[in-house]
Image (cartoon, rainbow, N blue to C red):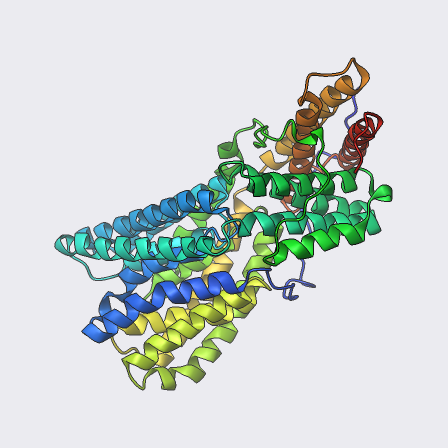
Length: 537
């Protein structure tokens, strides 16, 4: 008998939200880290150029310096690799832009190249899950470079500047590891403990997905941290405590979980949770299900390429002198589905409009001299990263005047014209970009839900067989339990992404609910079996 829930074949258009789009969230636990890092990475190169009277080269040094924005949530072993790839990706995108700018003056060709590069950057950043700020900073630099006056002979020197400042940004990103070598792992474990404590106090279905996702993120962080030191083993035992609380919330001690989380956020030694045999399967690779991530990202890549190209062409048709602003605006919109893309568009427009007003107020101060210009840009760099975690539009209030001031590095610009062009490009980019998101359908979103459902059902059946059979091999049940937890987290993320997509059949919501309930019951059963064998949470 099929467990599929009948649903309509009629494609649906979902309501676009307005309420809550601009609501401010809580600041990130480490909001100050990227904010301070980008200032430390940007200030020395820019001040050096200021002293040399060569602020016209600031775009190339900024390319490398802005790499300091990435990978702050990753353990330092993983961060070293991620930042290196970001620097290489930034230099590669800049190189494509500079070479194209030196070979052709056709704005249409340059916009086309920028759109294709933006699509590649979006796809790679999503596939590798590099995290904020994602492809937007890469696209901003590569698109701006397309319209920078350039000759082929100048390209190597400009790329060398970007590579040198990228190396400096790498050092800035790695420097905190000298003081707190396990900081990212401690923070991820603390978040898992806090969400588990909240779920134990109020085990609502709505909180279950967030709690399991936090625990899963903690495991992913620990598994990417390199050598299993004694500190990492202690953190693993604490994550197991969080898992136990999720599986049996009635028996958990929320106060104890929160006390552990508070200790992890300080500099005290890692609390020692009870030791048991639950870590036998900890080395399992918590990889995503076997479906192809490239197939999942294909519609978003097409949306990005099409939307960026059309936005740039529309900007050119309107006679705007900087079509890359419209291109970057379109590139910044694309999220996991149409509904989220709409929300980001509203945030971008509101943030940019307020940002140009801030620019109008600040530009007299910036025009006092080159030093004032550099200091204003540094202040907006800090403000953007300090505020953007609360809501994208709030960070955009600082990003917009910063981007406008960067154009002044090459020479004085007329403020009124800059403001007019920025407003026009924002509107064009947001409108055309959203139309492209609607036009390029993602009918595979429903297929991906079916694949995730099948993965959950397979993982649950495998775990249930181990529970019902003779005692399994050491670590087998633990590995099966974590595989099931991974599948459940992936299912919830897949359903949420598909729920905001247009032009698809209704999702099998009843089947999803049944699969999640059965999966969580099976997870709880694995904890009960541990207890009968003498393991205490």
